[in-house]
Image (cartoon, rainbow, N blue to C red; front, top):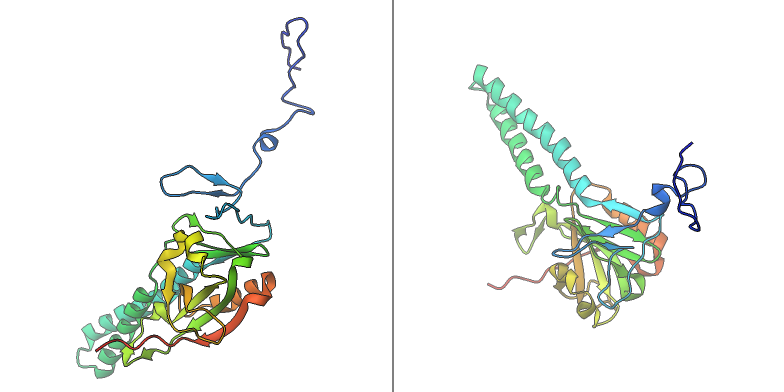
Length: 248
């Protein structure tokens, strides 16, 4: 038992044991957002209009970078290993035509996985719940309430568009369409993802915010499930994007 000297007339301080508060009680867990050049903000991402998007405890975290890294680790690892294996076999049999062909094929696959894994370490992803959707990247989280969103969908391109090869990282993307023309002014932090093209379907604005997704992943399905569970009215499904024809 701990003994303390208390001056007459003053209440005794609470004991560290028994019914006193613990460290966990004094410092409850909060969601913290780091902003460039500023102090951390608690209780979720800040909105430029003044209202914060507070995510609930059941918010879904869709990790884009993890899927990109998985592609790199599995696909790149296997194709790289087979490329080295073919090269080792060619040392003993330099005249093997098929070995040269397979080495070329596996080498191309290895390079493809490397180029398609861009941003695998940038912490990209989305937090989704009934209150809003929050894109995140490089330690930053940006909140968008559902009442500011007109539509969300998955846009895709063919491997070749306008007689040009499309980079694997740019073939599929999540697109967020704002509900009003004042959205860019309220969310200048999303400007890096803003694009303007012809609407993919009638009734949608030409301005949208495009977030590219890695290939060979279930991210489109996971995002569809998350958005439909949180805000089914905004989900418009999958559609083919039609990029503008480049000027000649």
